[in-house]
Image 1: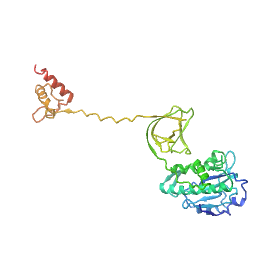
Image 2: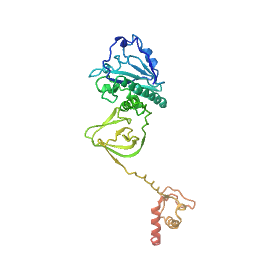
Image 3: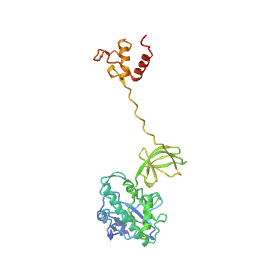
Image 4: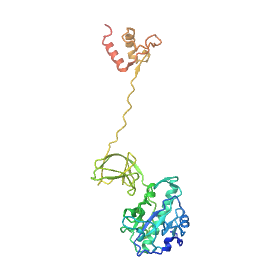
Length: 350
């Protein structure tokens, strides 16, 4: 991790001079705009007129370099407040810059123009954030696995100490990175012992046919991505049956026929695997005979006899064959066989 000091001396937050006494935790943010360069934010925020926000650091998405923008024990303006107060009073806040290969198309929803590039940028900021948070946990004697010590902005809101944002999980989830805040905290703990996180294995889906039935008495969340940190799209109540078409490689989620994902946790869901049903053989197309020449050899004499006796005389279209006999007999194979049997029995000789 490369750490560069770039204090926002002109920002009103720095000039306020308030301190965190003591530092109780760390909050991870994502900037919420497709801007990978930390310098853009530093230049924009380092002005006396910029009174909207101020954080302790930015992580550049192109290089992974960390820029410290406030003294670590300075009170920042990074998460606003919630129903129970503000983590600005307790937590250091760090922003991860975001790749240029995404575009926000509404709220927190992004459109990705280059998935490989976007994932590489996010992996870069993630690793630097792990190293930075490990450094800060050591510096301020914090337990990264302790309750409420390391939070995302989204988690801060859920605890009532931050405004209503979904970062950084919103980006991690939509890019399918496999990153979660629980995983992040574990990676920070490991980094404190010198272990730097590897890229997470991507979650894949393999085929599985069956039915998932909700057995839980309450409602069970259904998501559009296989990630427990992703918001629920809807909920299914007890007894709801869903067609399963796949299962994730980590065995955590069923993929449903509607494209959404449901937990595999047996506390909430029962699964019944379907037998593989072989496709039905194509039904034999019924053959119809219109001319005597088209008939099986064993039937030609019988049908000729019946045609000449006007017993079989076609459908009345007037079509005839080369011999002048009807060419619209419209006889099925079963009819032909029946006539032959009756002829052999002598019924047409009377």
